[in-house]
Image (cartoon, helix red, strand yellow):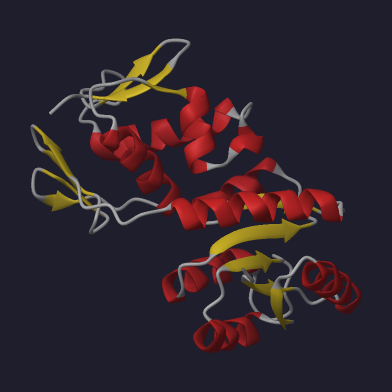
Length: 227
């Protein structure tokens, strides 16, 4: 089954390389060489997967990413020469499913795409609701409230909280969280978990240093308090 991929990249030689390689693998490829062109393409093509370069001529990729996520349900893989950890975290925080640093091999890119495609095909609508004390999570509506007030979460923060909510009362291991939220190739990136748990606790817990909802199981993982 062919899968539409939108390649957002302003380097023409790389666009040609990616288009040729992906087409040879059976993908249907469309391209955009600027942020504004990408937004126009998304409205027409509704791609399943997006490869996004951050260094575009008109809109920085980190600003474009949330706009793309608002307009379509595509899995977004950032492909960028920016290698600083802060840039990667910012992209993941803005909703990217993966981050691939240039230069990269075509074989690695294809593997990342296969993972993204599986995650998209395996995803199913969630209709569960979770509540304990003053915390309420509606997974279907992607809404979180605390004492009746909305809690603003980034896409990655919500995704991580949703995984914990679906296993409320049970420990979710570091590896399970990393695989569910960032993919299997991030199995050793436990610092992601520490960063996002700290951010979530600051938004949800009355006292982040003595959490009531988001609990740590030392050396194992994390657990959301049981209903």
